[in-house]
Length: 198
Length: 198
DNA sequence: CGCAATGCAATACACTCGCATTGCGAAAGG
DNA sequence: CCTTTCGCAATGCGAGTGTATTGCATTGCG
Image (cartoon, rainbow over all chains, first blue to last red; front, side, top):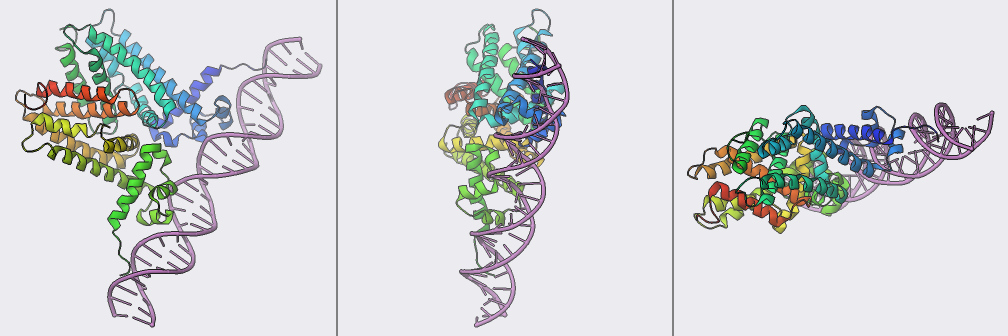
């Protein structure tokens, strides 16, 4: 067996270039040559690690989804031990809005993939998996709130709300501040009062 | 002056082809040749009515935005005289969700343009105009509700929610039924009780 | 030392893209 | 009539696309 390189790492490195390109210039700008240039590698290398463009895009979408998920997990654990349900949900959803530097880089790429998922079933399926997990987790947290009747509906409301806020912030329809205020207002409705257990 | 044709009508006819194509196959499939084929005209004609692809896309986006607006106005007037604020807002937002045949055709095209607006300022500006008008109108209706504190925030919440619901329905993340239930649940929160004045 | 398998660069290929150009038929004003 | 102007079809062009192919350097195994 000849040379050994970390196959997975190389693929993720190329996926990062795909996402960066998609975020700044949209998925239209994601061509094999541009991706290679963005990653600082040759086009042959890109071809070596992906059977075709579609597979590359699908992998890149899964990669960025994983990155977001990991970032969310970090934000939640950063809350310390025994956080309130409200704080957990807020931290979770806050990571989806383009507030931090990392999220600002990822959000445009996510919306680009989202739009493509409307016409590409392979992406839509991958999207559904992640979305279902997210809504399930939120629903679970909401169920912990006394007096909450329909956790599934509330969870769907929250994810849809954040989804919409993300695109509205990215298109400059609302300021990031307002988006946060809207999210907090809605969390108040579900969990009652302000931050913490209150 | 030679032959006379309705310039505006021809442009809108081509714009309809753009939207249909974008809805079914995404904006990637919107090429001058494909648009011509979809509209059943020659490519020369498409070029004759638009200076370039970008102008065509911008016009198509404005055209579909206008069509949605008109459909919303119809739905609202169809409520009859003196409708409750809740019913007006519900009819308005319901037309944005892919429920009716017309909306199901338009929604995918809208999301395609939305994603492009993230990286194309010209589209984003046009989007902001329409969005601001929509939020303003909703805020006005909400202000009519006694005891409502922050109409602007509530209006932003509603538009973001519907935005998110639209994409989640289109990507198969939630069923249309659930989306309607979520919308109604949230309208209840703002306007109180069920439909009508209750 | 072979030597085969791997990682990758380079290039060729068949298309397709948006755009510019050319030309011509039809129709309204002089 | 006849000339001018508009509406449009047809074609060509250069750039860029995804994919396939070729070739070679490197490397671990026998």
